[in-house]
Image (cartoon, rainbow, N blue to C red):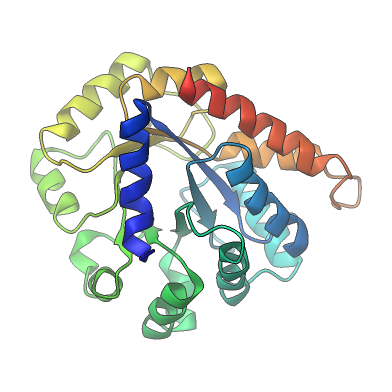
Length: 274
């Protein structure tokens, strides 16, 4: 199965089943490398249709307090971009179906070396990238080589993207479009269902790609409402907060962490299916 196929086939499968998908986010290495690996594998088993894996970074400016804290925990416990790619490669030993999208910021990739990163990401089994801080004007930095290598380039679209900007943002988009439903940071507040519906309808007039909606989606009910109008709902901060709730006073994972996170993801997945 080719890298691009996993994303395309995932949305085709969802369409054939007459439903939208659940996209889940965790930060690689949070709260520690081994627990994070087990969490990643448990996401797919618990009903996640696509996994977004955060690349740890010390200054994740678009993320709220929960994901900021997850980045710091991961880095303190030895997470790195190389180890993030190793996580994906290990995941692929048992799961060659669930798409994995790396999400984050350009700085760690720049330090790693963009050409080397693209090569290693492809070899590891990554399907696509979401870069928060690389605008379309900088596509030659990473978008062009990533797409040439077969990686999807998932664009972020915001409520402030006007018609002219949309054309530029969507020009090289592939895989799916990630609609950021609020103007602000992750995990803080939620957009109204009607506002999301209007925004998705506007986006559909500009692209035939599937549209996933994220930022501020925390409950099965919000997932359900979102997938009524979109092709996918993205949940990140709620999962990260559940991880944080299951850490002991030293920051280590409690024995029940994996099952509690899996239980949350199962309820979120039910929201996408009902």
